[in-house]
Length: 496
Length: 84
Image (cartoon, rainbow over all chains, first blue to last red; front, side):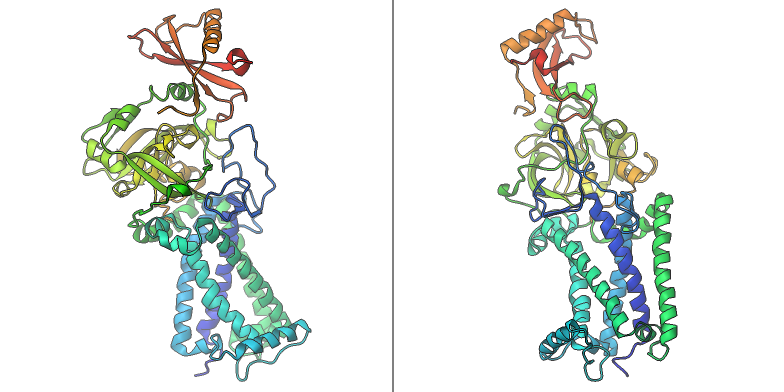
């Protein structure tokens, strides 16, 4: 067996990988656009970013939220562009699943066929050789290939780094941004230096892939585009003209797929949400749903300023409730329960169980913050109202009217979010009425908000006034499982 | 535990609010009662985007125990009730 040849599986994998990388990079840029700032510390304090990709400035005399900070990037660089975080996430995770499967298959075949020798050096002597090759390239000459191998020493090392270091770091640094993973295994996040450092690292991985791709294309041109592509298309270097033309056709096809999925996402986002979401959600439900939060951050880690996503209800009814410390507020709990109740804030406080938790908040936009939340464990409310056997979901209805209250969010109607009843049993699922030892602030959801520590922040409805137990969520709103799911095509299951 | 956003009013501030209620013949919207107890003030200007930057909500409670909606309020600008 020729362990340095170009077998069909290797060639197919190469081109699939090329397609996947373009989709991953563009959808990754879409995700970055939603909070185009990078931080070193987990509090994501405004002004503390070490990099920003926006020129927006925020007002000082009015509350602004992170929706106001979102950027709209061009579809040329982001998938699909035009401020579509929901779509960007669907593509990023859908392609990531394919990319990981392709990568695992590729590596397995490398070792099964002995092809690993083309990438993995077996002698430290490759290091001085690679340095010598670099100097040769910098003097505008081509270094020799390693004896009997398809690459020079520098190329061999570069490929080894991309396949065995960069790709695993991309996957692991992505996983380390999952609230479910971080909630269940806080040590894993600490390994990376924290939530914002791993987000920054993930960004560097993106830059590294872009740099690798640029140098890779340059090297193809230098070594002979036609011959090199002939190797990667036909398995031999004897058809440089064919290699040239077919490579251009393949590149056009990759661009064509990118254009097609962009247009599809912009014109039929609901269909994309359903199709890609079905795949991604099934995997999330199986792998991330069981992750229960075991977070106990020290109080010293509590952020001095916790960012805000979503503006409070801008109604006289709400303001009058607030000035009276929410004495007129009532929480209605009903639907498929044996014992529907109406509770005041005092009733909630008087219930025997009161729980505090110091945890890391993960916003879907990428920022994070540590806060201490106190309130009633949701499972204790379940004990009080006793859901009927057919109840499978819980809907949290809020006083926030997005059409009125949130100019930066597209869509109308009262904000609501629906969670699976199973999540209510998690030990750190909480109805919070205090934050950092004080009554829950208005901008953070007063008088009552949900804390769901293994999910992303938008599921944690704020300004709650009604809780309904349901057998099916598809009859509520547009049937996607929440206001953000209905209006901006987020996923309902957000363990990552 | 006091809500940090809510500001207790001093005597002179309450007097200004009371004078304002009298001048506008403010009555309870729910029962028509004229006896409104002046409570605390909530600064609206920063948090609520529709409000002028110096707007406050002053809490009023109808003294009529049988009033169906005892909690109400009046919106004032800073210069209308705060000390200079």
